[in-house]
Image (cartoon, rainbow, N blue to C red; front, side, top):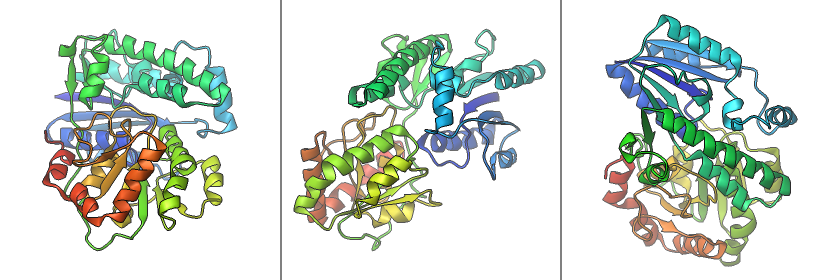
Length: 383
């Protein structure tokens, strides 16, 4: 089969949940099929995308001059596109240059299927083409913006979140209806889309991780330590750390003053860095080559997300390494986990803090939650 895979934001290094999921699926597809990988992303030094030619039949890479996330330039860019009917996650990437390049490719090549990876590339997909088109949704993007709106306290950010929520919801309905097939990563996402799509059009690809790569490392645990992993330039992850440090950590310290937290992930914002300069028990690592040593050191893994969609690979990675996990319900949404059986779920600061303290004080409970055969099965994507 000849597959054209279209992705905004790039693929390598696979350092976000979406990239990791797409990268592994693409590598497996390329073993049996002819894959053309077409991607457009912010230009950056030491771009490793040309190395993908070693794996795929053809690679088309379009580095774009995009503003730095959360910079003044991005605020200006957002303002320019504010009145577009399309959400910014589409208009940010879908420039005329990209559209022209994709159309030129399709004039000379024919494919059996076109895959739109995430909603972002939807603005350039040739929906009028007879070639079957698949939208691979890693999240329900509108739900993420709705949750931003619900937790926002800044009036301007609340207004922006509402505007993007409405535009993103309309875009999801439009493009998913145009697609021939829609892929989701959880039953929860499938059910959300089934409110406006024929359920027979939707296929669920369960989340899993490489359990040969993520293995328990006995003896590495540091007492009283917590770990959070995730790209810190993704707003829901940043919100999670602000929420934890401001609302939950003080409650934990009242009962467990020696607690510490490592936040492992790329590109923490200046705002987050400034907050944590005054909080000496929390360490920001920035980008790391390998997250496994950090997961292994943690007595427990925390996932205090209030905003999100899709599924969190970070939970399965921690479970595969035998780590006990405390998460909000939103953080564990879409995953086949059971509270108190293989994870602890808590949705208020008081309950979250109590769950963390319980784990820090009870090594048997940590081992029970992190060492079960069930955890290994579900992290491998088995039902």
